[in-house]
Length: 417
Image 1 (cartoon, rainbow, N blue to C red):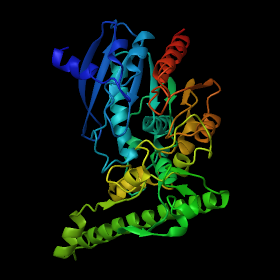
Image 2: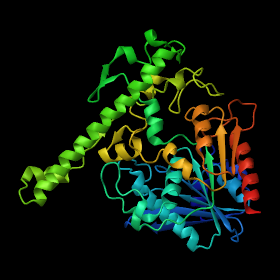
Image 3: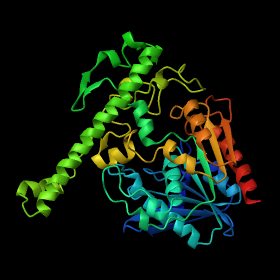
Image 4: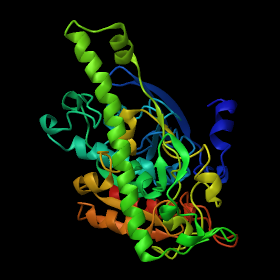
């Protein structure tokens, strides 16, 4: 490994990246550029300590490259190799369709089997959980019965895809899926998707009349408001779903006219056009600002910060810019196939579920539901103090990353016996 690459790999010491002080054992990291069955490319890195490992733990996220993931050192300590893989479009989820992302996962799984690993364990952290449980579900489904089309209508070709099965599952701070996560945080007081300033005051989560105290940055929401709010969140998703379908319908109509031989120049432009739209105000989960709702060790605020007027109204956030296809496949809490409530029941392999008790993204009721739906009879649920990335909740305590890592080491060693 060159010093430049090693410096890049060991530089991260915060958030989801490992603490370089824990990576004390000698290791090798080999990069692989893999071709997918649909002609695209995906990049992966294989970490080994001895080169004789028979079990490999695979880490992947549908939008990010987690090469410095904080759990890599612990996986090596357990006597396993670690495969860290990136999606085909790292850092860009504009066109992310989870059905197509399964081709990237399959390329990685096939590569690991070709390398001779006897056991593959999938480690799904945060959004990686919904990707991996979706892959597992489809891999275990007879090819002819796999999902044939994306929610946007695109053929998936999953029936022809070789999808190697896996032997175990680790879920670390898994949220219910990209779409479910977004629907819980969607601000339903948006009146017009084309004008984010228009607000229905009766649904505004940051309005004093509804229970928000701007001075403290905290909310205290009444049960009837919570019920109306959640129903309105779902209704907003339905409206955006319909908008996405209408954009695709317009494009498909133009293609049909061209195919029939009667297309105009405008039809050809419409058929070639890839529409993109904004989704504003997506950081408004009531549980973030009123921590008496589904209480835990978390602090007030969301993954994006403590000030909702910055995170909810600003430019940075989940699903800010999407295509109709990516919205329906990834970000819609109603149409996405990659929601854990649709996929987790297919997990029959030994499973470890790690919950961080101060998580500002995944809440106790979410974790309880996930655990109950896991199909395996060999499942374990462990709670660890820490935030969504396992960082310490106070200065005088050990980071949750290390405690979670120790539990993973123990569980992996038991699996390999």
